[in-house]
Length: 597
Image (cartoon, rainbow, N blue to C red; front, side):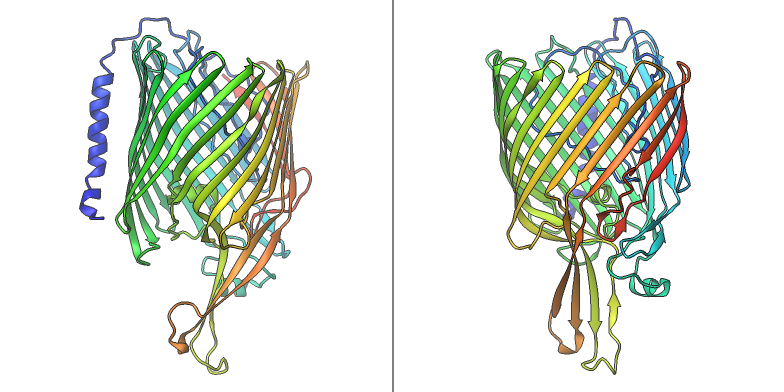
């Protein structure tokens, strides 16, 4: 594709958004009373999965929502950090102002932790919120080959939120910055000396850092029940950079509309985005440099709904323009249906859908931070996803969901270590081979048919006891690869919170991940043969053992505003790898205090 067209897309996105905002913000000032969330009520929470940020909620009118996905609880190692969710301010504000929460703690592996949440009323019709966080670890890890290595890691977060309420709409803004740093400390195979590691691994002990900052704007009138047309306009921009020289700029304008035509609802989602990535080795040309992509998504649909059933019929169209490749078009169905033979107790549901997954570098790094920094990963096409199941309530306090999915996927990626050996002379006596081992991950591709069967139970008895059980079984059918590398056949999570009478509160999480397979590929190139490409490829298959990760926490409420807490991760003392060669920390203890104000 001609690059000149790509250069105009950022200006085009800002121009379109400006027109939308100018039109939508003609609403007059809110006249209702204003309230905000009450003061914080600290609760026991895994410091690596903190989610007790304040939320402003209000009763919302019912809107048609299809939700067929089992909301998987991520499997955390003792230092796998889940991004803290943004402060959600939904509905119109309320009168009493919520203030802030300060948390601080320290743990083994030299782990300091601090986090601040604060929100305030910034005017009659506005709310301002902020969030800051630091978490770091400076300990060592023993690998599967018993090599003890330093594995430092840190995370720093700064976020600023605002929300302004007009008479019939609301405008939200978010400024964010996130920096995560780590080291390439792992490798597979037999233990090596420090000099051997420095000689064989180009990235050995290299420090890496991912910095991501940006802006998000959202304007919607979802709460206006009198509107003939409901809209949701969203502008997103981020700049992503790494210590090793990669950069990424993404700008996206998204819109969603819903209009009532009496007999049915008309739905339309559309978005256009521009992506530029620099400092990578492009897959198609093998050149080092930048690549640019424009993506256009369009999803029209009609929704019919009654008291016990609803049906949505539509399609998804995804267009991708790449400056190195031909344009791509993916069209998938967008059909969803559900029927409740027993209202509020049993609902049968089914869906036929699809999507295009744009594998830009920041998204891949968030999944696996040990991926080779210069990697250019293909986009993945979910040509269709067929889903079905049953959900409902056994009792008013016990919810359930059973679901099965079948997905046809093109260009799914799988991680592997890739060792390269170059031999320049026919006789190894005359010339020693050049060997470069890998401790960062390259990828292989294959088309995949995946079956997922899952179940979920959630039990809540007021505020005293909450219990969540979820399990998934996976089956993979690949076209050419031997295994679905790094993917388990089974996952299980159990979470429980117990709040008895008195000052003590308890929680626990158990995560089980099944056995996985992971390859180390060895490519040998005999230069003296003058043959194109790699002359010999060998693979060594490693087994990543199944594991149980047990985490427990306790909190003592000393006063209404002050509490003391402790958290122990990997209480089962499991030694395991999430990614080949990268063992996780052992038992991890963190203690601290929370102050609400």
